[in-house]
Length: 135
Image (cartoon, rainbow, N blue to C red):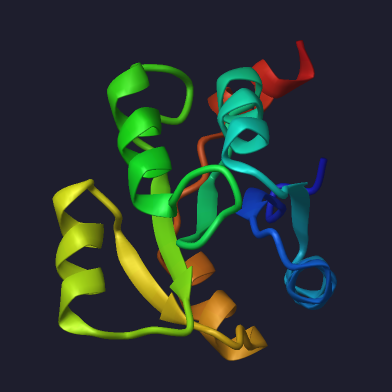
């Protein structure tokens, strides 16, 4: 695997948004797994280490705040992974909820290459964790 490649979990239930974000992330040298539901995201987060998780707030079976709290409390592979909220609503209540559950940031939709690249620049990859994914 290229040393600059990131493992990303995109939690997004809208197919068009999934395609657009995945395309941008591929351009930014990311291996991207997509989860459409909270239960799918939690399963992936238990199985594989990610450098960053982009978490939609509105999901069909839960909300991104509750799911982030579940990941943080799990003490699993991604309990310390940076998680960024994805939403079209940038109001104070959402930002406060994001902080309360331990999200590391907030991105307003639509996602752009610039927004995603700015986050990736802040992420520190853990080569040891990536080796765990190969086992």
